[in-house]
Length: 309
Image 1: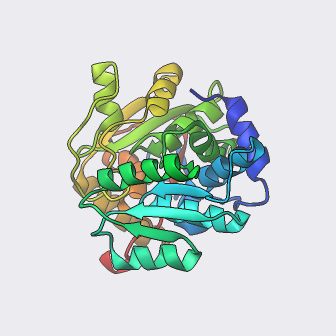
Image 2: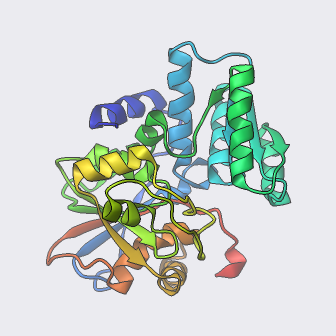
């Protein structure tokens, strides 16, 4: 469980290390009410995840938990890049475990940042188990992709910034995979604005958990599964969603593809499919604002191939 105090602490801790990403007002008439894009895809390494990674490593350092082994993470995607960046920025060694089939371009990026990359196993679960074992054996600080308090609180600083940039915002639309970003933002804006979680119908982790009353495994498929492909909502994400009354809406692959194209064609914004899901909720009508409602759409990542637009 995390609170606004945790997010405020993270904001203080990572100040000067992250970018204050801008907001851009969406063209009037495209969707009901007024809408803004929170352009978090401009953050270091192309996603919001650098915020949580920096907060996790700095908090661990404050508690005296960091050793010569540094940090370890299991991810060949956005979380791996973010933690490798954060570690390099702070002068901390980083080891990243990835599946054997991880794309060579991602492995090359991790190595270029300065991380030690360990490949093995046929899927992410194997890399995760190896990373946890490495942490236990070496004393390295394990950085989860989304389900740790400092990771989620760091991500929540996106919400704090939105409150400063659009003070009278009513609703924030946030894409959900494992739920760290949603949990952090919901904690940050609790009592001041509401959060609506947007999920692909091929990976409805929060939607299924809210229906079941607890986190449950879901099958994962679809165009956004590379970034929103968690099989289960994190415990932190679920608990904060229940406490703050987060609503979940689902969007389809065609909705996501159309929203991503619309961002490019209308604004020359390039985002990954997972980030486009939040805008898809408005364009498709999966979420319909009330008259006069002021909505911020968090565009959370841009690690994608522009050639596919």
